[in-house]
Image 1: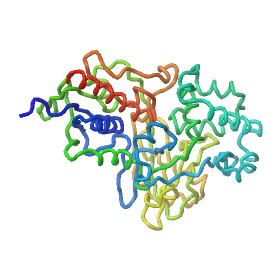
Image 2: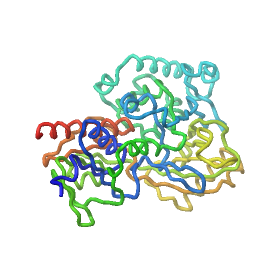
Image 3: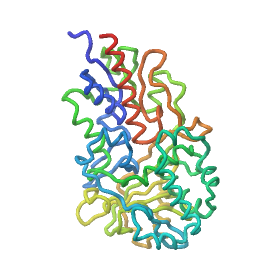
Image 4: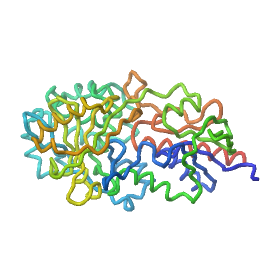
Length: 419
């Protein structure tokens, strides 16, 4: 029997763990990934239900993410872009707010839309231009305040903040208070302006599936929950123990805190995503729809089958509706959702068939300055374990991938030094 089962044992087959395994393999070492659930992906996973593709919570890929571009093969993902901009529910109708740099033909309509003032739209254009000239490093080194404070400092009026920024950024950061770090706001706003927002044709789970598929057969063991870990071993719930030269914890934040005895994992924010089948699309465009009136409970909506036709069977449509916070999908809440959709789209919404709902308790880390803001946390623990996950960098696909790379790089250094 070999003295080690792998060079690096990675606990968790989400985006960070799979990225870590990919980098370890590229360096010429042997990774083994241990996953407690029945499949890979973690939060970035897609279920096939009755011919529909259901992402586990509404998610998108900001294709301009610099590290993500290097790790994932976008051509293989067959990316399908959203229309740039959004439809904002306001004044009993919908107003189109488009990116004037990417949709110049809609600049006039955006300028005249009843969302904020003309001066506010000029401020958005100036902010976009300013962020284009700033590096990601400069953004994350800038003075940190809340997003609401930053928007106020930039001169945005309350109508623009309440009608556009609050519903838009609530869906991005799962924070309706706009207290998320201004660093994260400027980073994400820069990414939105730098490239398309998209989903893979076969759902967001294609991101993690691609990473998993590129690993050698036998690298990933699913249905194998870890009970305890040490610097060079993983003890499974089954009673089996695995040995390695390095161990990386890449689990959900609660499990990471338990297994690695972490005290610096921030609180996490929750969301609830409801999926409906519609015979006719309520919006015949692949575009984000925002609640600019603040009536709720749905803060944003998208017809996913208008972004990628593979999200739904032929002649059917998939509607995604997002509700913020830790909410149980109770009949009373569903009644509120349906009432809001009826108000938006008329009685046809009553005929939408509920397919499934996903309550994601640990969807994104709390990135408010009061919770620690956006800051890089250590990869190596005092006990010699390596840790990765979006809580180590920042709450995004880019942050998860960067954290997986950082953990792999430091683990590789240990392997090389030890020979």
